[in-house]
Amino acid sequence: MKNHVKLIMAFLVSTLILLGCGQTETPDETTNANEQAVNIVISTDNGEEVISDETIEIEENEILMDVLEENYEIEDVDGFITSIDGVEQTDDKFWLYEVNDEEALVGANEYELSSGDEVVFDLHGME
Image (cartoon, rainbow, N blue to C red; front, side, top):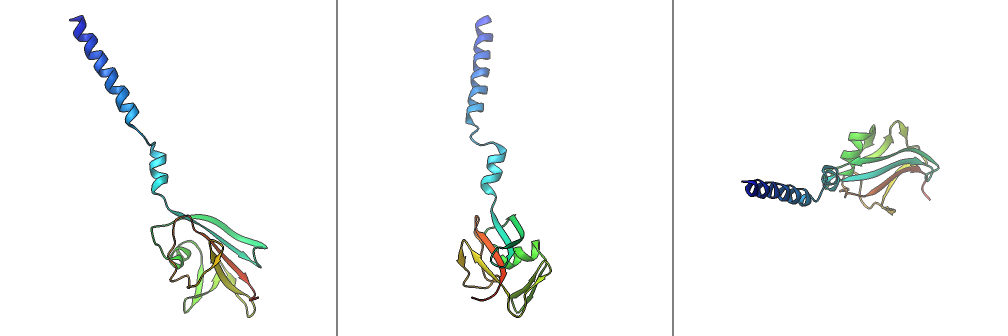
């Protein structure tokens, strides 16, 4: 009888050890692996004044304009942004943006974001 008890105990301990070793990710690691986010900086005069610098969670292939409208007060005319959080463009300064240090070739209403993108909107004059 003692041998049976020892055998059962050894089986239970072995099972618990195997179950513990089988877990490869903590809940936080699983959540972080599925999260997608971009960093958005809103500034003026080529970065002299930073109005906002935020990391924002996105869905896969989300459109930049949608993300902006969800997180900032945006005004636009025919898809061209004219004001962000109350900071309006003027006759000689315009809202322009870059993604990953490259000038965007499409409007914010057409740009599909990817996780990890660094987006900078800056109000400045044309050079």
